[in-house]
Image 1 (tube, rainbow, N blue to C red):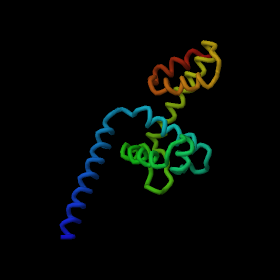
Image 2 (cartoon, rainbow, N blue to C red):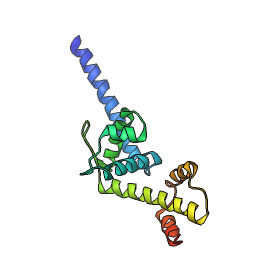
Image 3 (tube, helix red, strand yellow):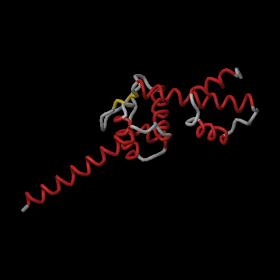
Amino acid sequence: MILKKLNKFFFLFLIIFYLHEIEIIIEMFENINESYENYLKAIYLISKQKKGGWVSNSEISGFLNIKPSSVTNMLYKLRVLKLVNWEPRKSLRLTSKGKLIAQQTIENYNCLRKFFVKFLKLKDDPRLKQMCCEIEHHITPEVTEALKYLNF
């Protein structure tokens, strides 16, 4: 009787596990969204301040002001997409692909901010920074290059 219950429990566990894996695989074929880019950017910025570039879950949690469990869930997704090198309960590092995405996102932000402040003469305040942070995910590398070409 107990063995039957354990078998049912194990079977349900496997179904839930595989459904979760399928969900991650489906996401892998979609474009990297804003949330992924924000995590990659946070990991990159934290790693630049540390020798060796290794980052902990708690550092990301503190940087983004979110729960550690949310960070862990995202790290599983980023690992499946091969954007981070990570094992649960250990420090992590960006892969070259993850680093490239983070650097591009940061470059987008910096170009937008310079454009708004130096070219459009907008005040460099928290609202402008927030606006740049929201737009940075939606511009292409070509737009970033065009903004750099303006030489402001």
